Length: 285
Image 1 (spheres, rainbow, N blue to C red):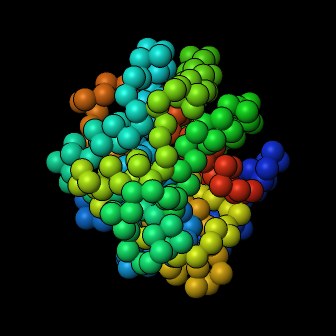
Image 2: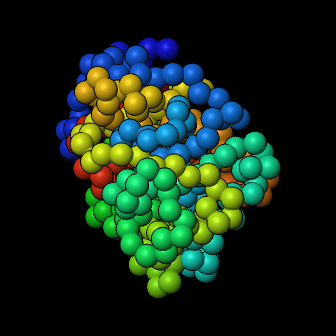
């Protein structure tokens, strides 16, 4: 499935044609069934022992956080649980729906190639969980740019002023959650609590090096990190189609507007990429 040649993305705050970026990486996208493959992070590094998996920033943490954002949009200041509890609350419903969404760390934090659940203190090698507060504050700081990029990358999501107001409310919700006392604990606490409640885990190796990121909208496909890194094309991939498929699995529990949830998730994915140092963001369709 080839990306549309007319589709544009962003490099920093400049709009550009991302056709070449997408074409260079198209061969690394493979078939991925959300009911058979686990869901881990959009991290670009090489998995140590894990084969193909679906990429959603923060794994199970992404759905937990963005459902919290939607709750804050609908009812400001209503999220009174810590983030780690929101994460735990998503594990069982997703697994009941045949989705194994987990968390990851890296060899540096784990001092080895296996996630050490007995190591209670220290770093956790997932930027989405470990830097959740700074990511939210960066989204607030760069709100105008990120909303503009969201509209360029996902124009189909915006149909009028109601959607513009929703995007602004998402930014306000991000600010409240990023600064709410007691909401965000450290990344290791969040990751280990998820594992202790049945979330799968894996470890990646190496250092961050990618400056390109892709928001993947093509259903049932994901990025092969191992093959891409062997060929010198490290790339952050966020499978937004999978994030929406995960939402569908629990939608009876969270009756939010699906398109507005999509807007919130896309804003969060773009902000996460920027916080991780991504310079160029494209959408694959």
